[in-house]
Amino acid sequence: VVLRNDTEQLLARARSYIGRGWSPATSGNYSVRTAADACAVTASGSDKAALTPADLLALTLDGNYDRSNAKRPSAETELHLMLYRRDPAIGAVLHTHSPAGTVLSRVHRGDSLELSDYELLKAFSGVDTHAVTVTVPILANDQDVARLARAADDALAAAGERCYGFLIRGHGLYAWGATISDAARHVDAFEYLLRCELESMRYRR
Ligand SMILES: [Zn+2]
View 1 (cartoon, rainbow, N blue to C red):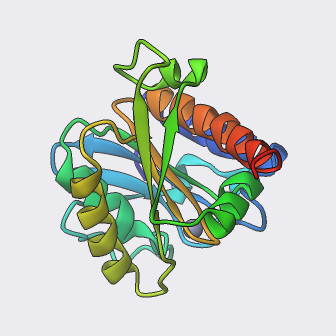
View 2 (view 1 turned 135 degrees about the vertical axis):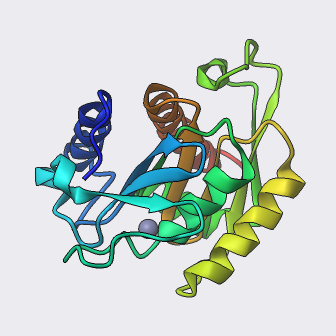
């Protein structure tokens, strides 16, 4: 059990995603960095509508945790650990399974989505103009999560600095930020932008 003064903020965000349709059927997982080399991740199969601090499990970034606890960390924990290891500035990671991200990742051709010329790009940390391109890598889904995490690590290295999230095809969105608030704002921005992209496809020839 991890108690930080912003733990409740993370849990409140996670619970709010259910009502928005972004986390159906106990899916989705959420984490926060607790130290330079440690984080806390939601437990596998936890009811996201009734998350409490007891559902957050402490892990070191190399994957060690208290195995005497009846709860197990999320099956996708390796993706969270990879993000914290690759960037010390990441303080929180949020993973949703929303229809917009899921559908767009299935119908968009290519292995990344380029978002540009949207005013809302300014919601991303460090962006102060619509005249930028934010790259969203799209990865093939893989039930071997360690292999998926290695593929995501490679895709993020190729995507460069202006990257705040990636999509897994037919699966969902991973987004992150320096704080829980930043990560949550990025999720909100992505959801809006992905819906705009989906809607725009209807008008393209
Ligand atoms: Zn997932």
